[in-house]
Image 1 (cartoon, rainbow, N blue to C red):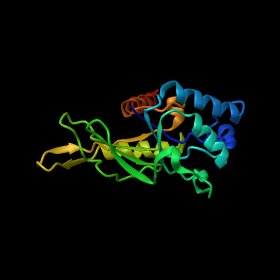
Image 2 (image 1 turned 180 degrees about the horizontal axis):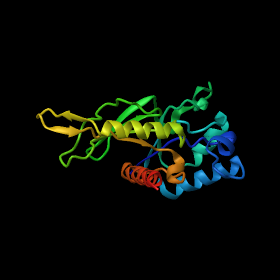
Image 3 (image 1 turned 90 degrees about the vertical axis):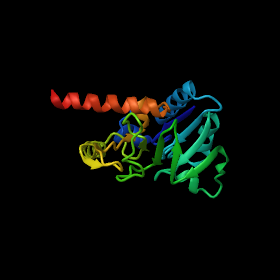
Image 4 (image 1 turned 180 degrees about the vertical axis):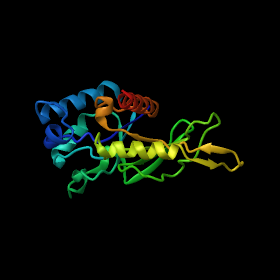
Length: 211
């Protein structure tokens, strides 16, 4: 099984109390909860792709967390992953560490970047049933005003109509999914689970606008 998650920010005290306002009594409580939620779901041979900003802690603190998390780990670099720049960093806990990647996912493709990419590779592609064939999975923006901007951009793009290779006119299936850890209650999720989480988030947002 392959899972995805972004912006855990282990050890990031200010983020708990200010930006995200996660509501934990301490950064230690936050770390413990995220580890518990991770290991409740992930098994030893599962794959977990971390979409950046895994830890704000020192190399020693971060490696201690990595040692207790289950799964085979893959890291897309985030702007706050300073531990990987430590001269004593051993990347052996990760299968790979990259700035960007594209992976096959059950006859679909996922484009992976810490930062959302406006014109990502494959954003026009659909499967035989007309569903999006490529998904842009990212992190970085948390649940901020940037999420509102990105939602509005995606809505605009999806309303555009373009000709296919066969000449048929279709709407653009552009799909961004922010794998922000708070959206999944700090638990890594599969692509299909993230698609459903994103659908419910946007549905709830649209309902609140209509009220």
